Amino acid sequence: MLLITSTRFDEHVTPPGHPERSERAHVFDAVAAQWLKKGGRTAAPRSATRDELARVHDPGYIDLMAATSGHPTRLDEDTFTSPESWEIALLAAGAAAQAAEYALDHREAAFALVRPPGHHAERDRAMGFCLFNNVAVAAAVALARGVERVAIVDIDVHHGNGTQAMFYDEPRVLYASTHQYPFYPGTGAADEVGDGPGSGFTVNAPLEAGATGADYDRVYRRAIVPILDRFSPQLLLVSAGFDAHEHDPLASMRMTAAGYANIVRQIVEVAARHGALALVTEGGYELPALAACLEASFATIDEVPGSKVPGPPASDAVGTGTVRGERALAAVRAAQAPFWRGI
Ligand SMILES: [Zn+2]
Image (cartoon, protein in one colour):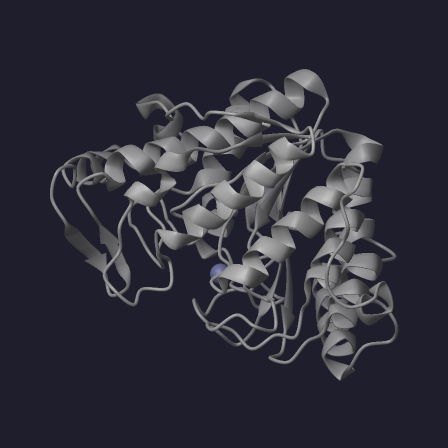
């Protein structure tokens, strides 16, 4: 696995007390340093080009973002830019695109450690800490290269409304999300399944607050993984948000680093059966939990000698779970049955 990251990701500065803060980039620096020490490889990101952004964002929105360069602005109630944000947002989207390109070219996983996150950003507006939709830019880069089936699996605790909307009627991109629901941003009900030729290529598994690693395990093992296997993605992208961790201040799930490692393992196995794998960070606001989840994911994706999967024993991440997993599984099965027979 190649890590793509830059020490510059702390230059996108948010107001004091904001959860999506520069210190998150220092976690990326620390885990990347550990990765290097263990013999892993890293690469510096490139900036996304205007053409790449324009495949998923409106030209007018790109101009608006460019105009924020050099001075601080507020784009929505919780989304801010600082003088360097435009440049750093280009780097975040470029890193995601680069991860997809690397994975396709080398048949080896790539993980882009970036901020600001991306999955709430829509075609024409910033939202929920997100400026450009990094994972969507990466998916569009793959489509432009002729890739016919791209899956985006969104493990962030929030629903990726922006990503879903961008590919809602696009059968070449399957978007699958597990998220706390009802919750911010309000989208992600199980019956949001895509539109027109994209029907059945949006898969939402809404989980109630308090869901555990075992609940997530159940939904991935019995619904998301079988659907992904049937779709057979040539490129599997992961919106790697770690804010479902039990210590995260924004959400109310009971995931652990071991729980995340368990679902990342299932996703890695899907990619190994069908194609290439690239991951890009999204949320994760408790810094030690973010570091633990990243390290557990790295160890899962690419067995590095001496790496340990931290957190409680793996038995914590499997088993029967609670009624939350059962309900989410029933909802996603009912909604997807017309498109994925036998799921
Ligand atoms: Zn999130």
